Image (cartoon, rainbow, N blue to C red; front, side, top):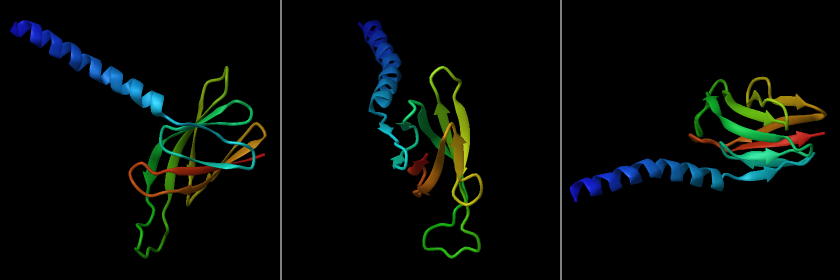
Length: 131
């Protein structure tokens, strides 16, 4: 009887990470980003551009911005990693910054701008698409 409970426990323990990853993928938001519009993304979220390509906010790579309510000599910089995927092509990764260059990324007739980044460990990023 004890061995049977142990097998059941082991099966459940192996199944939980798989179920958790499925739940994470299914709740990930997928938004549209039209020309001249902006969208706010959380790390891991995606937005579809008018040409069908997909922009994903991967993560914040570095954040040296001055803390709120603190007076600093330099405002600092947030460095965010993005990925642009077009059907049939390998995804391209690129960085956008708040305080230094590049603050925009040029792609096939569109320019993606980083407009704002919230504070915190997983900050939201507001990006804008210009034609």
